[in-house]
Image (cartoon, rainbow, N blue to C red; front, side):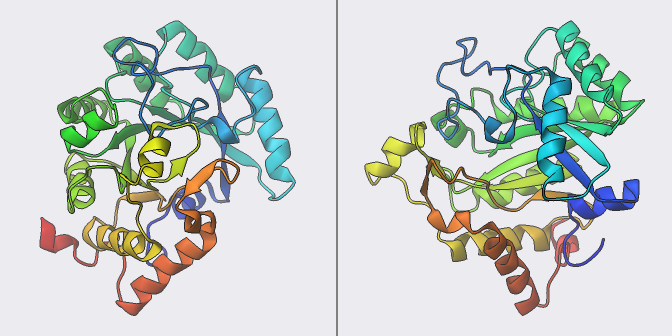
Length: 306
């Protein structure tokens, strides 16, 4: 681990010998809690565009999206190798033949060195797992699972539409296939109990998560959270509250877990609250500052929670 936190940037740089950038792709997916299979409307924190604000759009081929994203990144950064990140909505929620086609299309680009695939743990049928296992044997791969919380009452309220035991069963299958997985956790969900964020992280660790993505719960226009916030029924974390929780997590998890994210990337044009989250660099610097004040680092108290 380099520094106080075992970040994905450091991990990829050590693995590939240079800075690796992620390219966000839209494979044209939806979600089973959005299209009516399980529910409609999706999670109440998710807008109509999902998490596709940073993609080139689903109307373009995967290869052309990659080309567009490389051109965009190259304006700011110098990079030679990229991870193709299937980000928007549920990226295994389709026929396995279609999945094979778009994953292989991404891997056919000469600058792509691996895949990251965001999905739901209830969208990993056996034939899809077989495909992922095949891909995992020939390239660098990780799967991202949207757990968010282990409190099923909270999950029901925000319309996750699957129980936590589904996540646990899916992680067991992924581990058997030696496929790395990353767990998404949202801090500050409506109706969550005081320690839910911490219990969720410890549970993901117990399930063998390779990495975690810690998200700030923020309110965007056009989501179910908007009316809840405007009516005064939803309180968002202050910056100080959020940073305290992040540091508590970092201190208590294994130093081997890869930290993929420590805050959120709300769209400046649609973000309602909290506005302090727009200053991402300040948030990250504040996390480092609190760790320094505590003379602390990732995994400092890890043995105490085993």
